[in-house]
Image 1: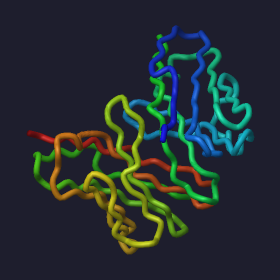
Image 2: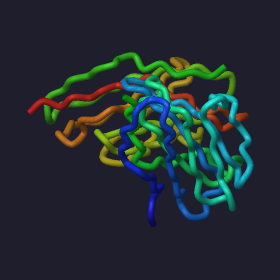
Image 3: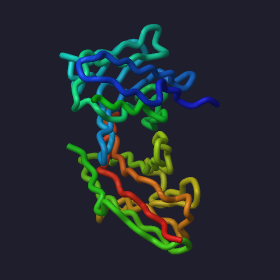
Length: 115
Length: 113
């Protein structure tokens, strides 16, 4: 069974540029999460989707971050414009619907460097 | 509010010796607790999960953890460390209402030859 797929794996951009990350969850997983992991810290949730609906985006900096999950499968996380402090690893995770299980499966992440 | 505290940011052991990574939790409810491992430039891999079925949980790669309610602990152990165990380990509690993961700050395990 294929795991969570993310691309790109690495991205280097200059500040004020836009950037986008893509995630394909495990087949059949209705719930999708985006996390940000700063160096030396644990991941922090940015947004959680149940199918197409963003059910928890309270930690997403909405002035510059946006996310979408059209058709309830793949998801894209965008930053525009990027700032130096956005340098981090962006992780995508998926799970079966909340209420069935709370076990999340993580992708390899996208390491973003903002210069 | 739920939280986890990983008591050691770095642990070093010799290959073949036991591993102990410590985690304390705080939860108003009976928690779901997890240990994940993260190798360099890799995603987080689930080692094991506690969901109240049994207090001693066995995971992959010889790891196990014991849930101790009286001590609010969920320490991760392995009888004999292998070089491939060198990685970052995260203790996680799942919020029972929102299913949100609350991560500890991580413990970096170093295995010496």
